[in-house]
Structures are given as C-alpha cells and as structure tokens.
Length: 77
Image 1 (cartoon, rainbow, N blue to C red):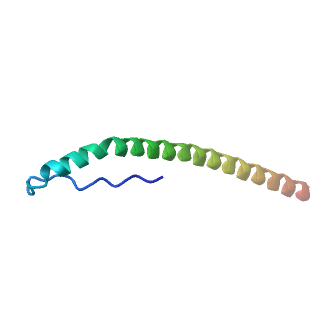
Image 2: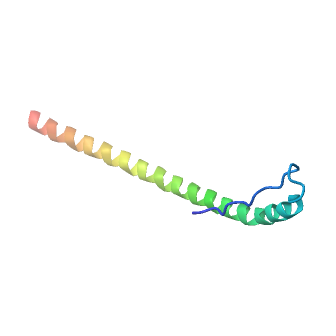
Image 3: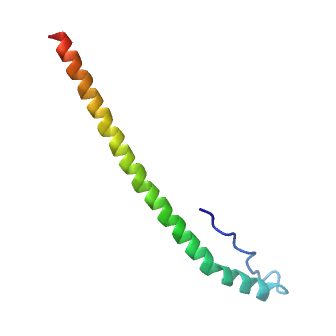
C-alpha cells in the first residue's frame, strides 16, 4: 500500500516560492491522511492475521508434542 509523497514543504528561507509550496503542501494533506489511515488499517488487519496464525502454530506444536509423548509412552510400556 503506497502513500503518495508530499510535495516540497514551504520554507520562510525561500519566500519567493512560499505561497505556491504552501498551497501544494496543504492541498496534498487530505490525500496523505486518507492514504496513511488506509495503511494503518491494513497493518492492523495483518497484525490480527499474524497473531491468529501464531496461535494456530502454537496449538499445532502442542498437539504434535502431545502426540509424540503419547507415542513414546506407548512404546515404553
């Protein structure tokens, strides 16, 4: 998910271009905000998916360990 680069911000050190750059920069902020919020939602959704996958993997590892221990116990008897 890409975020559009913001234009060059205005600078008091460059008064000749200040107004034009300020208009461009401020005009780009709504799009930036929307894209940043979409990215945050995407990252949060992927975190939920990763957490669920980790829980599934942990449960599978526990089940495999229990099965191995049961098999070892059966052979030791």
